[in-house]
Structures are given as structure tokens and as C-alpha cells.
Length: 86
Image (cartoon, rainbow, N blue to C red; front, side, top):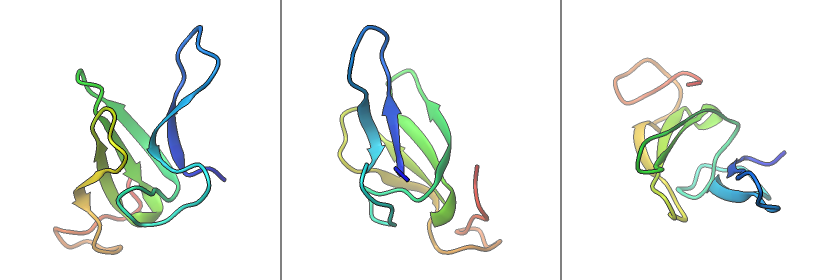
């Protein structure tokens, strides 16, 4: 399984990885574990619901790692925790 988000542009043969890695999952700033929900803003910043890591990550355009927006402190219902975000 590839735990990553890719950008596919019409007319371009190769997809570009914009978040995560193609070879493994994990909980590092450059890794995702079962990414589900994705949002891209007007600056091409990518926001990812990193489901198995119980966090929301932000990846600015061209970044090689993301930054934590919410969660990331294990599964739960405390103010710094999320429960399988999607």
C-alpha cells in the first residue's frame, strides 16, 4: 500500500507525490498512515486526514515534509487528540 497523496495533471505522464512516501507508512513528518480526506487550498497547500496516526497534516506546495495541524497525540477525545479523522 502506498501511503501518499499524488497530483495527477492532465497531459503529464508522471504523477507527482505531494504528501507522504511511496514505499512505507509511518508517523514521521514526511510520512502518512492510511491518508483519507484531502483538501487543497488556493495556494496549493495540501491538508491530509492521516487516519491511522489520528492527526491532520499540512503540506505546503513543494514541501518534503508536513506540519501537524491537529491531533497527533494518540487516539482519544482530549483536545489534542483525534479519533480516526477522515
